[in-house]
Image (cartoon, rainbow, N blue to C red; front, side):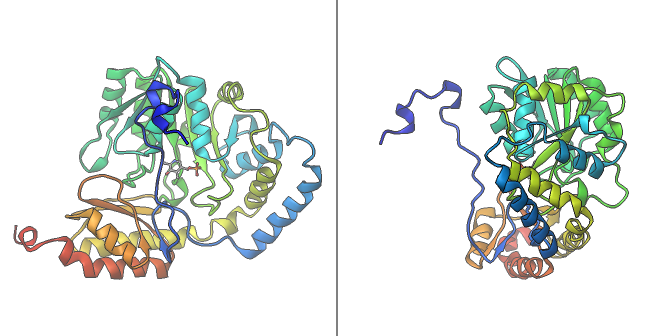
Length: 368
Ligand SMILES: *Cc1c(COP(=O)(O)O)cnc(C)c1O
């Protein structure tokens, strides 16, 4: 057994740490923004049937163009999007990696607005792409002029706009997205992993695709669709973009079983998304109750809430973990992030954090 330091690893990967959200078996896991509701049994049975029908054919490679799945994803997105505008891969992380492989790489740069999704700098590193962390305005918001100024200053090859943003929950306005697009000379990706949790009537960046060939909108089935274990992410863009992504994907990258399962879930999208309303209620309840407790809960259009006013996030994290409740310390000082779970899970978190509130906020802080 040799050590990592002894291996002829790429210099630019030395000293880096892999993605590592704790994966612990606890009664209340509210740390990685999964949909904590299991998928409905009738949908599960349909998916099992589809997989069973696919199995005898697995001696052959799967449909490299995942035609049926692309059609189903285009139907699901609506907005007049056609299947030649759709790309998919094993999670939107792989979709984003394809984007970096095609449009980034050595000598090129990716710009994001920090704090944002922790995978962006890791995906940049893995593809040898430079990472530029631009600043946000107060309360993690981004105005059109803030976005445009940072993009003009750095002129990156790729911009990632996460809306709603992980880990802060902050949505971006379409004005900010179009200002970013106008300022950019490279491709602009809007990561809408949490779009389904936005308040009803919130317009998607999909409405901006027409006439913007450098705009890419990525989505995932991992969150609202309660499908994180299957690994299916996708994007919509100009058909020329999907042609570019074909240059870097591995052949047959989406297994026949993944395609069958995802098509099954999409055939029941209304039922699969039925829990979204309930999750939104729990999210809004977390914001309201944490605010009452004296924490600073940031506005969220996603299925999680970032809250500040935590004097010792590490101690609160450990105390909750001791009670079987796993949340996330995302490394933003004095904050923690919690996923909106079922009503029971959310109640367990709120009851535990209510008891901790006085401990987390020592007298000096309250007196101030
Ligand atoms: C969870 C998440 C994803 C989705 O990742 P998958 O690979 O599709 O599971 C993408 N972007 C953001 C910001 C996320 O939080």
